[in-house]
Every structure is written in C-alpha cells, then in structure tokens.
Length: 280
Image 1 (cartoon, rainbow, N blue to C red):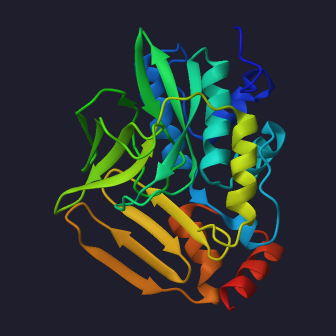
Image 2: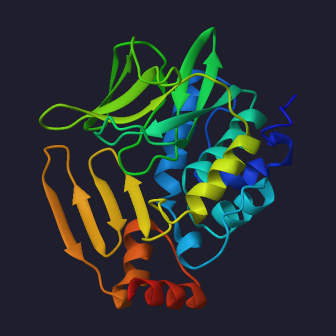
C-alpha cells in the first residue's frame, strides 16, 4: 500500500501499534475503521507532559514516538499522539492532512495556533479526528460540517463555522456542551500542516516559560462517562452532569495514582524526578 512519506506510515511497526491500543478489527480505510481506531487509541494512550516535567526533550521522530508510547507504554501530548496516530492512518491507506488550532477553553482571546489535529477525507467528505486534546477532546471523529452535533458516550460535541473572525485562519470551532451552555474548545482553519510545522510548535510548547506545559504536570484521560485530570497537585474527576470531585495529591502518591488511574508506569528514576518537581 502506498504511504505518504511526510507521515511516516512506512516506518511504523503497525502490528505493535495495534496491539498497544488493543485493536483487532477491520483494516480497510473506512469510516467504521476510523471510528474504531480513534476510540481504541484514546482509551489506551493517556495525555501527558511528563517528559517536560522530568527534564527531557519531547522528540517527534517516529522511532522515538514508537519507543515511548508503544514499547514503554507511556502517553504524550497532542503532537506526539496525533503524529503516531497519523502514521497508522497513513499506513492503513487513509488520506490525511494535518491541521492546527488555537485553543480557546471557553475564552475568545487569541492564543497562538499550537494544537495539532487531523483531517481525513473519506468518500468525498472531510472528517476531523483528534486523539491528542486531553480530557475534553473528541471521543470519535466528527464530520467537518457546519452545525453538526455528535453524542459521544455521555458527552455532546459540536462544530460551527464562524462567518466573521478576527483572524482568517479561525473559521471552524469545536465545542462541547457543558451543563449551562456550549463551551468552545478550539478554533481551526483548513490550511494544511505537516510534521515539520509541528516540530516548530513543539519547541515553543515544550520550552517556553509561558507554555501551560512547562510549569506543571498535566495528565488527562477522557472516557465515555467521565473525565479524569491531574494538573499540578490536583487530581479531579468530572462527570457529564457537571459534578466534580477533586483532591490534592502528595508526591508519595503520584506513582500509584498514575499507574491506577492513567495506566502510566514510571521508572524509579522518573518517579523520583517527578516527586522532586512536585515538591517545588
């Protein structure tokens, strides 16, 4: 099967990746396969920024992504997650494009366009698929269509096209329904992005002092009926009815919490480095 060199599908150990996410289904490039792969990846590989926290660079070459997320059983953030996922989609014959979004998280102020997501063309229609946004991210692909709403587990997502925007690149808005109203997650355009673009964005996100990922631990996992987060010292679980349970986590608790709630097993050295960071 022909692959696109930009996404590295020919370099991927597909069998190892599919085993990592527990996928044993159809491998034809269909919508059903895309939905199943999205869900399997999301449920198996957690969102986390622990490389930054323990003082290592975030590497985006496919060999490093496979070593970390497939062989070591770790997670990653948007660039890592969606680049690994893109390689698998490419290998399976999907027509994919990279996109970039400005995170909103309920605010309209303009943030830099640093979030990576993917577009897939299937039978003449475009779909958004994104396994790297964290706790409030999509659980399934979403058709790129104005006004679409999708019930995914106990959550509802929507996509709207903004006719007038402050920047021409912000045309589409992904949102999720909270108890009181719609909540904007991010805004994106359809300009094609490539792994080399994400390498530039990744440098900023993983090193700049104003990045949300350089000063605190961020570990997240969505599911069909709750959203789990560990941000800084706070571990929280949020449910669709808006109820939220939160507590502070001690450095000594971290390894067990990461293992039981997020399926992240740390080496002794990383556990020690994480505890030292957590105590600052």
